[in-house]
Image 1: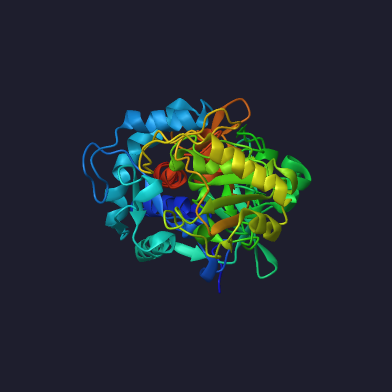
Image 2: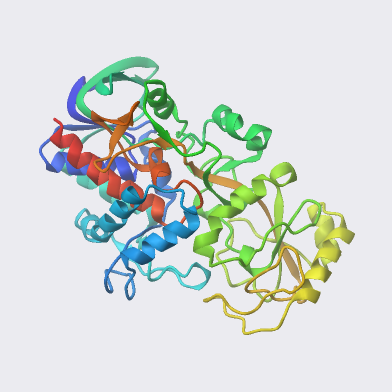
Length: 462
């Protein structure tokens, strides 16, 4: 295969953000090349494991019900980030999110009705028909039909940048280094969660027990290169999108089928049989992404979700079957937890539950009293055998340390000066908006909005 030596717009990374950038740039007349680290079968980074994006809308739109205003979106984002967000960029993303459904539909993406139950997303999040892979297939078909060239198995090793101005990129293909020059570049190649050494720098030995939910290709090579060349950073390297996943999941690419949504329906204990956080603190889309970090702080980074037969059919199960036993004592033994400790925890929890009107669709009044930590909602006694358990580990989706950008998605270099031709989109700059916590579907929204902006302005910079 002959490799391109130059182009107008070079896009690094072939996930949602990169494809949005490539399509926008090509539609504006620029010649576009995508360098994708993975081969064709594994293309798309974390996007292939996604299901939905969050978008504001004034009324029913596509499959979204009722309305979800920009102010509601902002307040939801503010609550999960606790203020760790760039308000101007966040509000920019929210404003543009309303355009995404129509734009993606034009590019061949189809949507399905949102899931119901504990997710409570029918009003806020649009689900891709066929999931992330179907989204990617549609985006790749559109990009290639427009004339975007995609080079797989192409790992970018470094960017040649002088005083914030990009010249060319050096990439590895079939074991040999190659160069490609471009008038502008869009970096859309993710965070560093699959870089075990970098993760260990941030988290210590605990990182060895983390599971990477998505691609193994997001190693932060370009991010580190940009930082080394003076790009300003945002975000804390220990902050990340981290959820509870089945501890039996593979180290990489387990994806959505390893996620566990059962936390709100039971209790969660560590390896000593002790609860450590309020499982019913808030609705699941606003709290599911805190559980990875919570488990990461527990001994050996392991925890167990415990429930009884009353709730087993109320959540999306893991790919792996739950462990089951007729008694809490036997379940503890099977999990390797001291049985007396788990029995005491369950007995104390059951004794503290106040009766109420159980309703998993809202913040109900079923809670505990005189118990630390409390369970604020959806508290039901664990009293109906058989009992079930899922082992949990931190499942990292992406890291929040990234490069700072402006409202045109231009990367800021030392002194806050915007680069004339270096743009960033997706997880590599998501920390500008999500400095802490997570709001379901926002990662894809950031990728699509800033991907489009990056592509538009990269084409203009040609």
